[in-house]
Amino acid sequence: MKPYQDGLKLLMNLEITQKNLHLLLPSKVSRVSEMLSNDSGDDIVTCLKQIYLSPLYQRLENEQTKTWHLGPVALYEEFLEKA
Image (cartoon, rainbow, N blue to C red; front, side, top):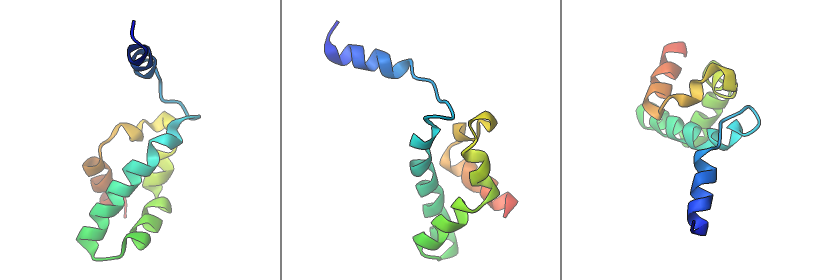
């Protein structure tokens, strides 16, 4: 087996846990914040703060809720519903 195949096999066997969930959150939060900024006209820093302080983020950072499975559009819609 070639070295890159070993690495790919290892990556495919990774499981999301509370311990490694933090690796996924920045990209999800940035996409949701970007959508919020585009729709609201607020600057991106303001939107990032709104997301990080929201109930959505509390659910997102808890692996057991499985909210991290959702894509950016679904997360944004959920944010708007709870805001």
